[in-house]
Image (cartoon, rainbow, N blue to C red; front, side, top):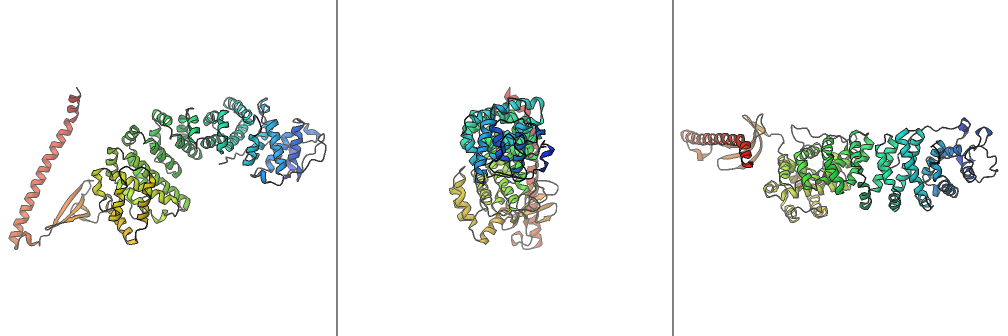
Length: 581
């Protein structure tokens, strides 16, 4: 990613006539070079000026200076990317060699930074956007040591003076390092010269262009595990957590990308525990930024590999937050009745990129939940929070977010793994009896308990996706039956009726909720015209009286049990203290 920065270019009024430049062979003597007009010889002029070391010509004499020539070159070729394929690529290659050999040296820091040095670095940065030219530059001896030393000198000056030329020079240098870090073949050289030290130092700067180039450079360096270890030793975790709190949106994205890469290392996870990085990540889960949310959930997934961190996530309310993100994106028509989910915005257009981002976020949530339910207490919390329904609903994404890409398959795989982990606990198994068709259920069981490899769930996913339409519709209805928060079907007295649990000889049993409470009950409905109650009205009245007596006895016993439970709960602290003493 190229981070561009608009900076004022200080140029002579006499250069205002320059519109565009091209490359031609020099034909006039260097002793009196003319200012290049449209179609002039700017690159050749720069080469001649550098070769003769004519860096300070008299501007009033009408001769162009190296600074002005470099500025003109930067203006003319600021949009060029493929210098090696340009018709005048040979001239550009010579210019690159001269800049690296004569200007990317101690010359950069031998005197206070000025606009001349900024233009030299900017021109070098433009040329190094071409990968072929990167290889040519790296073949020249001592180029990286000189650039690394210049960066260190400029950083020291930046934090003491904040001079504008220093800011622009550091912007160009970090852009150069970012480009080189994008190629793994240069990583060892970059680490050898301590470039990563300089980039980590610049995470504390306040200039957005420098900060974002430094973050991009470190992200490129940390994509390989061997390189990550070198960066982890520099204690950059605290700086990244600070950026997650206070930086602008793009810098937060880059900081979360880098922290996600580094969180794969145990030393960074330990640092996050000391710095309360877990607490910060949980607080930021209230964000509506899809990209940031995705990275934060992935970081939590990485932290949850540690048993103590699993406990900490559960204790600090991480599981309800993850379920709330899933709830905010649960299937249309299957949304929890009377409840509002996280409500992360999917964008007004609902385009493919936005839909894929939503699907990736859901998959990350399912992955993190699967890691957390390895803990028995966390598993119970997921079930209590309607988690089995919310995860099962991800097997059939809504039409609004339906995507033919790999993101939908990835979501289905992670949802199946989370469900299989929950099924591994025996107390949860009864909830899955009606979820899958019989043949699918057999494959679901055969996967085995706590199988982590996501590839092992691919055959099950393919089987579900290839089910006939009517079988898929039955699965959807079975998933809906798992929803604890769905709308009641009807009301009886002071109770909301949700579903039929079963039928018997005397009537039917429903799952109900009492008005203005969140407590569920089983309600039995008895048909008064059932012959088993009696043939005449007197017999039926007597049978109903016996039933009501039985109900009253059960109520009385339940009331006594509640009173005993309350007494024990009040005495529990003193009993605990007595046992401890």
